[in-house]
Length: 241
Image: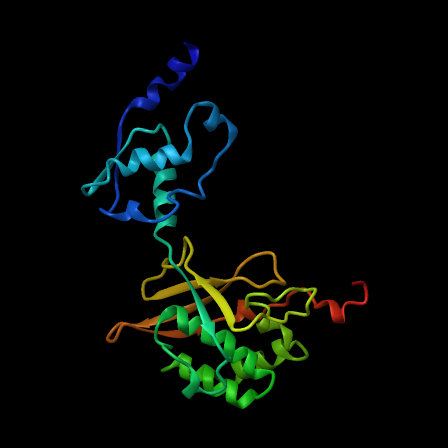
């Protein structure tokens, strides 16, 4: 009885505005907190999703779960994030070999491929990056930055591809696959998108920013310094491995 009295205030309905149809996304609210006290109260996140989904036919959703609107709003935001896995049978070696580069996900994936190319053909890689950057070609300072970050680190850009590990010296499986994802703060700045990729040699995702050309809707590579940050050295180079 005491538990019922405790939960009584949670029965008050709060209205949460959510676009119609958003609840159709797979695995709704998957990343929300699932602490034991919520489970003890008889609230499962699967139940939350079902309860909200049953009320999502219109432009409003009624929150009868007892979970705060802000928590559910964050969950709905995560549900709408998009990821794409880009596959290269062979890595492009020139601007002519890059495909669909004005799409934000492909633009990001091709940037990683260009960094891989830099370790074999610096000038060819710069041409690729300039094609991705469009109206904003690389400055001499940015070219020098690229040179410094990839010096003796041929493995670094390969670490973003599927199958690469510290133990196999960041050797990806083929065909080359890379997952590019939006995240909660991808669209904080109007006209820009921040996308994340994961390196097998880092504990946290790395980010690159793309800028949108409003007149055409095309995306261009804008900032990527974090992608070139150091990672764990491969086993072959580690005297303690």
